[in-house]
Image (tube, rainbow, N blue to C red; front, top):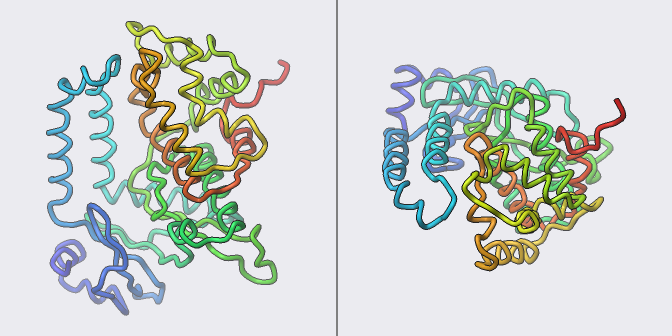
Length: 343
């Protein structure tokens, strides 16, 4: 770690810090985070990429792409190769700390005065080293394990709000919504009740660029799915490349496949539970009727990260056992979800 810092920040790298903890505060697949004090007195998180991690990761994905044609027969109707190519391109971006710093700066500026979301500022960035302001708070994993009902509900609502509002406000989608990337920050001052708690957001290594926000087609399809317009939804999904022309599906079966997204959007407040998630997973995996919509339909490459974020978010909300007014967030931030008004 010292060698990497010396190579990336210079031989006098320690002069940049008043304090530096050699023991990592956190670790991930391609790097680790150290707590430190910047030379101006700010507490900071120093993210250091493991030497060779990037090359190893891209090599693994290259090997995976070579097996794509062998995976095809296992998932009829699904074209694996372009999905792997899209995943490889997005993962390659995660290795670029300059892109990560840019994405974090954009979010930090946009949410600077937001009452619900906190994004740490970027302090310094160089190749394979990223320094940001340190953020305390309760990790979402701890809220999942030991949080009160109020904490769980508030964390769930804020998570949904951030992930749906982010693309509309920044043109970027935070594409790695796992519990380790979020903190629940208690309220300060006189108001310390649940409604004052905020969501701290970390790690902008994986983002999707959505200049116009989330695609309107998603909102339109979801609105029509909620009202049971199976044939129209099926045709829209086919137009967007989710269903190949060579594949024929029952439109009603497609709506059944989309239930994990439809059900939470049908009601004012939805209770996300592990039991509900297990039920959905078992239903989607059911081999009858054939062809299963879950195997014959696939996200178009451009929608791959959106699909990942949607399913991952639902998974985290179920871990939280949170009651969330998801429909409110969809109505405010997802283009096409609200019925268009008169011209």
